Length: 564
Image (cartoon, rainbow, N blue to C red; front, side, top):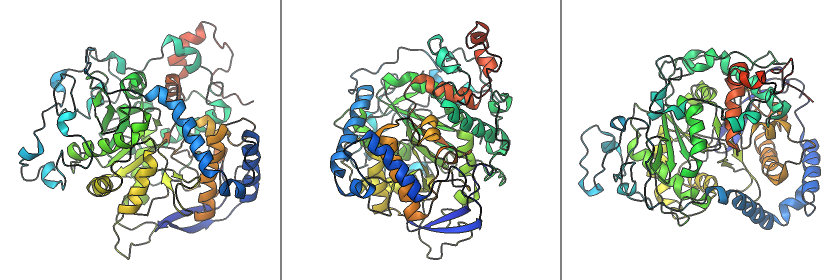
C-alpha cells in the first residue's frame, strides 16, 4: 500500500495545471523493491505481452502497428464476455411482487410535464438552467415507471439509511431481512477461506489488511456525515499484519468536514443479488444511493431509469444510461444542502466509503475548485472542477499527454462539476453516441466543454486509490501469472504514460495499492463482494465460526495470512 515503510522513494505532492504536472519534491530516498524504473518495467511488461500475444513485439512496434486491430479485438472480447450478463430488453411489465420497505415511506411522486412546472422561489427547480424533460436525448420524466406503475417516479435515495439504527449497527428490519449481511451456504467455501487462501491471493490479503488497519485508524469524525458510529469500530482484527506502519498521508490531517456522498450505480434486475450485497455492505454508508435499473422495486431499491439507447439495458447501452443518470440526479437531488459529491460506477465495484470520505475531506480536494492547491493560487482565476478517477491512457483513444478516467473503478464529481457538466457538455457533446465506452466519451466531453485539469488521486507516497481491477490482480501484477491482455496492455500503458508525461513513479504490487484506496473493480462473482466485506471489516470467527467448527480448514492459524 501507500505506507511509509512500504515505499522509500521520493515522496511528492503534485498539482495539475492544464494537464501538465508540477512535482514538489519533499524528501529523497531509495526507490524500494516495488518501484521499477522505465527500462526495467518496459522489458518486464513486454516480455509478458509477448508471451500472451505472439503477434506483438516491442513497445514502439505496439504503438505503430496493429493498434486499431488490437483495439477492436479487445473491445470485442470485452463486450462478448460481458454482454451475456448485461444484455436486457426493456420490460413491458414493472415487477414489484416482493414485499419490503414500507411504501408510505417511499419518496415516489408524480412529475408534471415541463410545460406546467412553476417552481417556487428558492426551490431546486428555480436554480436549474435546464428543466426536467428538456435534456438533449434524455427520455421525459414520465417515462420512469415506479413500483406501483406510477409514471414520473422519483425514488427515496436514503432508503438504505433505514437499515441502520442510531449507533450505525445493523437492525433486524422485518420488512427487509435481505439487507442484513449474510453468507449463503453455497458461498461459504469461498467466502470463509483463511486470509490469503481465497481469490484475493496472499499479497492481496496483505494489502487488504493494510487498508483495514488504515480504516480503523481514522477519526470517527471522518467516517460518517450523519455523526453515527460505523460498525467498523466493533470488528476485531482477524489477520496478522506484517506492516505496523500504517499510512498516515491523510489521517494526520484530521478534519471535521462532513462529506455527503451520493453513490450512483448502473445495474439491471438480473443483478439484484449483487446490489443486495452492496446494500448489505458498503452501500449503507452512502448518504444517498441510486440503483439505475430496468425495473423499479421497492424492496431492492432498483429504479426504472430508461435511456434512449437502441441497446435497451444491455452492456452497450452504458453511455446513454449514464447520461440518463446524470440528468436524473441533476433534476432531483442537486439540493445545496443534500449532497456534496457523486460517485458513478457499476455493480461489480466495492467502495471503501471511509477512505472515500477521507480523501474528499482532505485539504487538497477541498481547495481544488477554489484554485488553492498545495499553496498555488489560481492566479488566472480559471474555473476549476473536481472530477476524480484513475488516469487511463492506452492505444489511440487520446493523444499523448491526455487521458480519460477509467470507468471500471468509477469517477467522482463535486456538486459544482456535476451541475456544470449537465448544463453544458451533456446537452451538446456527442449526445447520441450509443455504445459501452462511456468513460471515454465522458472524458472527451469534459475536456471539450468544461476543463482539461484533473486532480491527482494518488496518495502522498505515489500509490493509487482508484482501481480498475480487483485486489488480487493489482497486488500480484506483473508476475508469473498470466493476467491477460487487459492487465498487460491497458494498465501497463496507463502507468507508462503517467510516468513519461507527468513524472508519476511506475509502481506495482504492494506499492501500487494505497492504504487509503477508495474503490476496487471487477468483482464478477457475488462471493467476491462478500469476501471483501469479510476481510476489510468482519470478524472471521464470528461470521464463519460454525464453518470452521465443522472441521473445514481446521488448522491452528486459520486467521493468519498465508504467504506461499
